[in-house]
Amino acid sequence: MSTGHLLVVGAGQAGAQLVSSARELGWAGPVTLVGQEPHAPYTRPPLSKAVLRGEATVGSLALRSPAFYREQRVDLVLDERVTRLELAGTGAGTAVAASGRSWEFDRLVLATGAEPRRLEVEGADLDGVVVLRDLADAEVLARRLDVADLVVVGGGFIGLEVAATAAAAGVRVTVVEAGPSLMGRVVSPLTAELVRAAHQAAGVRVLTGARPLRFRGDRGSVTAVELEDGTSLPAGLVLVGVGAHPRDDLARAAGLRCDGGVVVDAFSRASDGHTLAVGDCADLPDPTPGSDRRLRLESVDNAVEQAKAAATTLVGDPRPYTGVPWFWSDQGDLKIQIAGLAHLDDEVVLRPGDRPGRFTALRYRGDRLTAAECVNAPADFMVVRKALAQGRTVSRDAAADAGVPLKKLVA
Image (tube, rainbow, N blue to C red; front, side, top):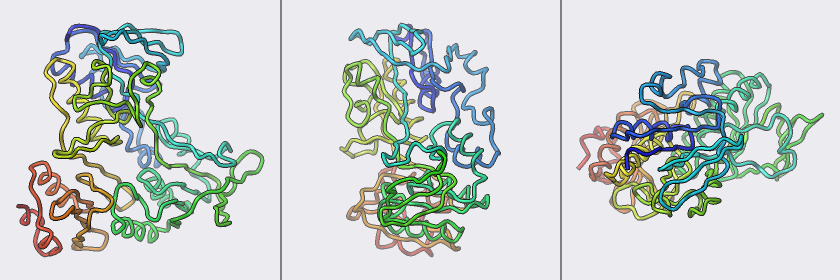
């Protein structure tokens, strides 16, 4: 059915792409896109950088122009939080918002995203302990970056991007990471150590293997972070960046299977066979060709590409979501680009760059190239991304010879 009412709950990157692709592929019926924020769909990566520097506005972040929604006949409903789904078992049903407003639909797509994890420690509710997920969070953080000391709890992409931005603005920054290395879930220890050295050279203090015990405060506002080893870090502001969990409560309450996200198949179909789920809220088969694992991906690439594939399911021409996942993170002078999904125990072959701060770490499982971690090396990133998509590889024996351009080593 391409003529019924399509309801998309969640107006982020995935939701915006879904309605766009559905129209491109011929969905002719009414389309409603419901978001709980007061803003039209916008891009999130600048929240940790350009927004904090005062270099971005709501308008400049917009994913689509206001004219797009008019011309594509998309009813964009903002500032409404859907709290209940009533599914009929045929794909149709009703969605009800906290305000009491409701929408009947013939097909439903969940693009509800994820929300920041909170620390359950003493003082977590003090004023000045913040998270960063949406534009409102970024605006609060930007207003408060005039402090002397910022403590960032969590050494992942978001935490390190904010740390670099704040340090460049003259704030004393300490990053506290519980794991043995930065970005431990996404890069090799070798890359993590080189990135750590770059942050430290830029004035950021980095503590790994460190956990907050409590946040200290005075008159309701945070003043320090006390670590489990007794260290006390002064803090006029604390950013908690310890990951996010999927917003799958709607799906779960509606009886859809959830397991660390809304469980979907390669066609983005949930357990009822009708409802679709895309983006950060979905637990999906790894789209990497040949992989048999399941995972949840939080990236612009996944939000866009999975939504495009899901739209083919909607219009009755289902194509499985396949491709090589990729990610990026801009951290001060570092542009980190990752192609592919490595396992933690995949081996590393380092290719030093032609100047300090530039390198590529190739990841291997046996003799098979699985991923690349490229720092200030965009050409290498493009080579590996293309090679992985084509099922090609780079000989690990030759890979370490940085004198030979990577593109000449692809076989």
